[in-house]
Image 1 (tube, each protein chain N blue to C red):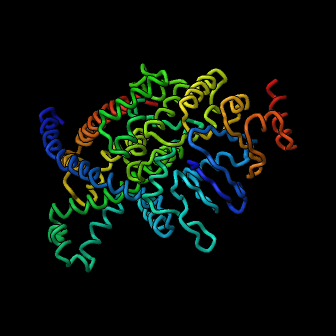
Image 2: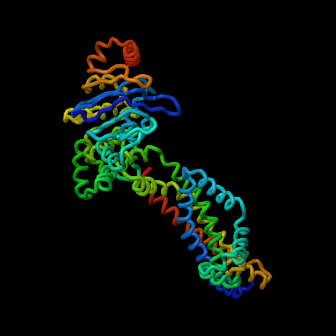
Image 3: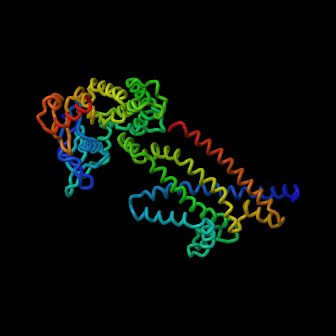
Length: 256
Length: 232
């Protein structure tokens, strides 16, 4: 059974359709990369699934739970608050600009949600956090504040923070777009490690080489629709689609 | 004035430090929470509420505090509701000459006025917190209340300390407006002494008292800012 099932998802901002009829599945342990030009709806797609934006239509199933329970007069009626909360806890989200809590130490950033949302004991939460920090290579930084860390370190903390809730699924919304190439490498390495551990991930990214390398499945979006999807070989190597070709070519030219 | 007279005068004025500090303290105790509520109401998505709050803030900031004090002082006894047991109780029988009525009317006026200023400071602070903080908290499954008290409010506090210190220092000086309804505090006593001695020195002494209080507050606020400086 797919861990995430999206069917005919749509979304408009003030009458402008940003997502049109989006359908895709994510299987357990799979890494899905979503690529496409800016404004193609990639981030909005993640945000709709994670309830940061309200969807306009379609269905979303996370671990068998429906995000939208019903439709009334063509408008979605969301599931009861308890289900929405349960869905939220199944998905971890890593933001482009980290969004760490600046007034909390690294340790507190990671333990806050396990303690106040999952009602874990502080001791237990700190044990989990220490293990995650070690994995991220940040054991030394537990008592530091976000403003004392580099962008790459901050992003690793935010990955640890998302993982601390033990989600089934991890979303990355352009996790390296705010970082320089060197720091980008740091983050990509962490994501690769997670992929090795069979963490299910959906990654919106502009790092084409990385997407090709790490993803099991690639989705190319443009103008709010899925233009093409398939294995990295199919999308990057042997695409027949003109729009995909054009987009990838521009990337290759820019980065040669 | 002789040194003896100055000393005696200082003693008399110093005795009225307590009423001045009482106005100061009670105004803060009531206006800060009230200001928080007003700020939240102003950000309310239900338009009529935020509209009403806007009118309240406009009036409180748009008219002199002295005018508000005198209005409230005379208006409460004139209101029909002042017959109610609750208000009778609250305003000590609404005896316009009693010191406790004077004090309560003053606190109502000061609290309503300062709440409007604090509300604007709080709102500015709350609105300056990036949207990403709310989104990160939501993505971690925190409720709206948890997000507000654990994530937003602590960051707001740091941001509003400089603006609030301005308000608090102004309040020390504004307590002198209580003399408008003949409430006995430092400023009124100093003015009385000034007339008795036909000399400006008593006012200068009162000025020193205000100055010292604000010097202490300035040191305190600098310390608070420094304490909150552990993150950017």
